[in-house]
Length: 303
Ligand SMILES: Nc1ncnc2c1ncn2[C@@H]1O[C@H](COP(=O)(O)OP(=O)(O)O)[C@@H](O)[C@H]1O
Ligand SMILES: [Mg+2]
Image (cartoon, rainbow, N blue to C red):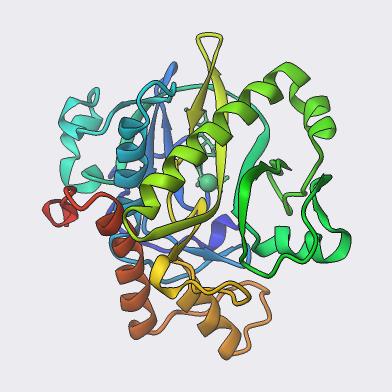
């Protein structure tokens, strides 16, 4: 994490209260057995937080996570409350700063795995397949094209590195980190959630190419924590932009990455400012994800 590059922004920050932890995107306030997780409008690319925020992004991430958690009936999750006026004091006083972008959750003992599910062949999965015909030790049919749909989604965990890059690992290696029984459980939950969500999203014109879940223990039970099926944790494609053999633009940082590539940034901090046009188009794409999947949610009421 490159904390000294955090942009200065007022929305999402609380006067006089410092978060216990500041991630690339989220600020976390520790209430003992609970946490308040605040999604800022910060955006990261190539492992750096950019100096320019994306208006509405934090709300999209929070509102989407909460909507999915609610939709996924029967799957244990960490969310207690998203209505800021029902947060414990002093946080309930900050409805303007926190509204729409924060949640009160139960603190979990985190399972240190990135639980990735792939339903399409993209990113590092496509790269690995090209080199070995397998992804994380799972052999796949021959002759698949880039972005092809996998009939059976696959569970391809990676390490959760606090610094540096996550590394794809086999189920056996995951078992060494978290214990084989826990890995069986997070695998089952990850595939179950992904299968249900992929079907729901398809009916709303969105392809969830792949996604990453985090899990933790709450009261001895494995529960979904962190963010759920958001553009930051998943590769979302618009169904009408999808063509096998090509790499469809994703519903998140596509414009940002393209812009940074075009101006030739070498990925060494500090990251450059984004142009207004890129910011607006990126903000629109994040909102499109929420609007397509849960049209009944009105983000405007928090803006
Ligand atoms: N219920 C929970 N209990 C404990 N830790 C959590 C919970 N939900 C999310 N987290 C952790 O909070 C952090 C979220 O901040 P974020 O900005 O997304 O961090 P990162 O830069 O690691 O992605 C992650 O480290 C995540 O594992
Ligand atoms: Mg995160």
